[in-house]
Image 1 (spheres, rainbow, N blue to C red):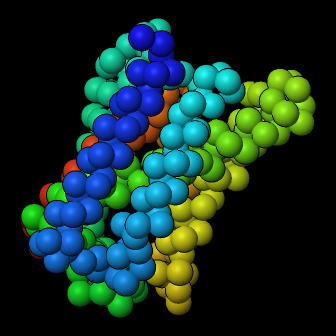
Image 2 (spheres, one colour; image 1 turned 180 degrees about the vertical axis):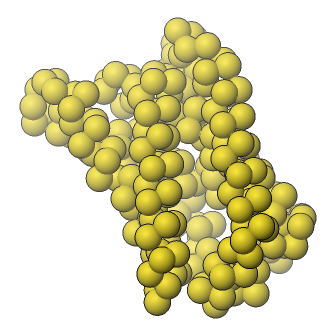
Length: 235
């Protein structure tokens, strides 16, 4: 089996999980803490994630990105280490929220009762949400533009440079989206923006070095502590 076909099968399995996750979320009546979160599982978003992300997975090797299960990448570098780093950063973040009372400030800034969706709905929402966000931030926003610029326009010249220019620009997307929730709280906005931007740049490095499953594993580990454990604690 070719590496591209294997990658597409893995991605299709993740998309199948998203469909089941969406059904479970609807049946159990799981809702985001802010209205904008509910749009994450809209049918149009799932369609874009499936089609756009699938195309990006197919194009990945053409811009020198490792396949989803590239045999040259060790499993510990693809899955284990990213998950552990995500768990560690999530633990530090959650501890800081508890010790400083930051979770209360974040909830107040977002005009929400809590920072996280209540458990056990958090398991469904944040696992599926991690897949959707990583497909958008790391596949659709990166692979398609880099392929168009480096392969078509520049005729396969400067792929690495183009990748990092696009990656740095794309890394600003998530902190920009989050800034609207913290309007009027300049200090929190700056701290959140800088840390989220830095996290995204790190995930771009994981993508470039170990393939898309590495940043996905990192975010799943991060969310497992930051959001799921946080929801168990009632934060």
